[in-house]
Length: 585
Ligand code: ATP
Image (cartoon, rainbow, N blue to C red):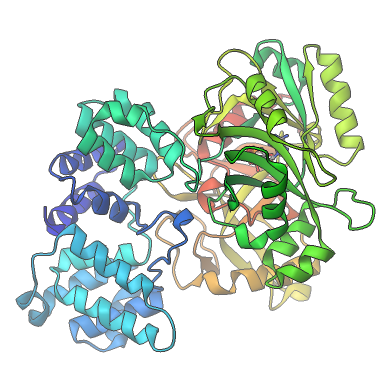
């Protein structure tokens, strides 16, 4: 297979809007891939040379640098590239146009394979240290000179981590299913393999080389994060108990950072819910896991909570995030000590226990942990009456917890990697006021402040994540909830993310003063979800218009623990809209 096959398919996929058509086109390409190049094909299409958890550098070419690369490759002044970029709005397309005009580029083009492109980009990613910026540019110019204009368009976009094809992870999984099993029936098994291994290129190779059977029996491996299970939400105890089948293990919801700890002897790796390695941030947690988890080999999940150094009482989440951002870990380790609250076990002494029911896993966890001051199991009580659930909830809130998580205990109460299912349901204090829950939104744009806010942003344009189109449609404009300090911090945090034009994956009918790369996730609470002529989230799903959050306010909580594609999704928003109580303004 040649990279030009990918480029041609990408172009066709880009020009179709329907997800099914995209799947058809992309899966046809996959049927032509071999075991040697399938991993590169999938990694390039995901726009990620390595999964996050491998802790390898990303190519991460910024738009400004891309302008220099295109100018050098096409032999034109940078100002010409900038001018076209202003007209066209996409640097990939600009590269294609300018390179088509440049005889030099096409004359020397070579037949690149997907592996050639992958390896070249990997090399660029690994260039570090003094002089590396120039080397990166020259390597990229070389690569573009070896490519046809259409190839250059997509190579450049991949190097910027933004292929813009509307092929999200789930659509790629559907395409793999169609390509290698003939229809979409196998998608859930492939998705499970992905959720367990967090490595879609690898799953694709197993599928192609070893067949579908092998994919159905993928088990966790210590050192590879398992995509985390998430909780749904409901506002009353009655609904919760009904949903889980009458009985639940009710645990306090601790307000900290979720961690998945992988232990193999004295080797411990900690993964965040973004699947980043956070081992070096928490040397004290590594010690706790080594000392207080009895199995030689295991994978467990827990909440890391900041505690007061003297009283050992829980401290708020923000405190913990303060520690995460500091580089002087040893100092923070003493000023913001932490406790570990364990709540699940997924793998123990070589055995995959994810499919065991909740109570069996809880017993295994109890057996695995030797309690200590700072290493504890989450509080848990088996409850089958809504009055009792309410009491536990009240106790939870009264003792400084966010609320409770009720976990199903029936025979099918497995650990459902990578999914937000009804097996875990959260109930939080905030659900009783206003909107059923806070949402986590991605900051995509901003409006300049006036008066007291001059020099800062007066309002933020925020978006949800659309899983099917892999894009960020706007859902509200937020101007309240900010203290002066927060506004300053917001400005600082957004400084590196600014861009001249709307990001191609951001969908908006509003014109912000400043646009940003969709990266920063913040927590927002609103009064209700309404149909909107202004915002485009979920447009056409329930109504002609989109959905918007009314009276949105920033809660002060930066969701550094979430990546943008873990923000509230269009699907979540639609569900929240449908569940909304009829009372309200
Ligand atoms: P929220 O904003 O409500 O925390 P979220 O989207 O961050 O929601 P969810 O998966 O919906 O996360 O809620 C579960 C989160 O709650 C977990 O990721 C975990 O960090 C935290 N948590 C606290 N206590 C528990 C517990 N006992 N069991 C499971 N998760 C817990």
